[in-house]
Amino acid sequence: EEVSYTYPGSADPALDRVTLRIPRGKRCALLGHNGCGKSTLFLHLNGIYRPDCGRVKWGGEVYTYGRTYLAELRKKVGLVFQDPEQQLIASTVMEDISYGLYNAGVSNAEAAQRVEAALIRFGLEELRERPVHHLSLGQKKQIALAGVMILRPELLLLDEPTAYLDPLHTKLLLKELETIYQEEGTTMLMATHDIDLAYEWADWIFIMHKGRLLLEGPPEYVFARRDVMEEIGLGIPLLFDVWEALASSSFLGSLKRPHTVADLRYQLKKYLVESKRKMG
Image 1: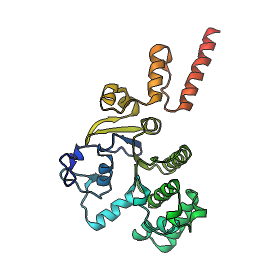
Image 2: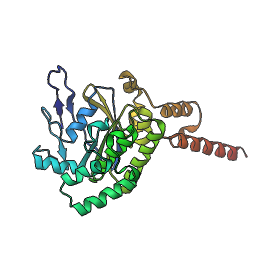
Image 3: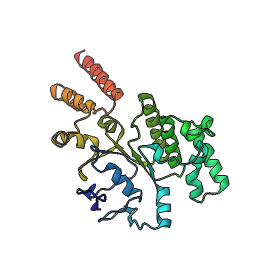
Image 4: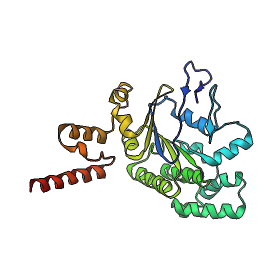
């Protein structure tokens, strides 16, 4: 609520009177250019930074920033950094994944059980004793995600999770996020530059620009504000643009707007089948 924050030595605020509420049980995307305040917002949500003014709340209660409070908060609000090197601190994969559990006071028996389950779930069994610094970037991102999810947070913050990943590892990561969402109902907020990914993946979109929240809502509402999106240089998702062109030039307005290429293919096939049927 009305959160502002300025980094020491900076003339402009990184966050400028930001008020937003993350909807429970939604996959949310946070879009904006570099320097718009996305990462700074995440560091406030996780309690790492404290606002210059305004309030951050969890479950209606204002953050208090004491050590005990923050330790409990970070069990509920998990943050996966853009650069996994900032997050991986132990020597081996198994040690790193288990680090948060032992700090949270989980018993050795339960910690061992959860770590084993996480290694299996994230496909890391063969890497359990591997030194972290020997791993690829994609593997490091998987370990960072596993280390956060092992605490079973209610809100998962993902700062540019697909940055620097090739298409295969991006697909694998998104598949894992979908599994987490479907099985556990974890609320997610992903900061990304990829508007096409945001359109395909998210139920709710936030648009930030120069430290302020400009727009929020379902993807159809946000990307329909073409004037705002183009004015700030973010543009429109390709699939959204294609569908708008098709709908404006023909008969597709009654069909459901697709969010993936597979959806588009299905909708076009459905239209062709219905057209043939009407023509006899």
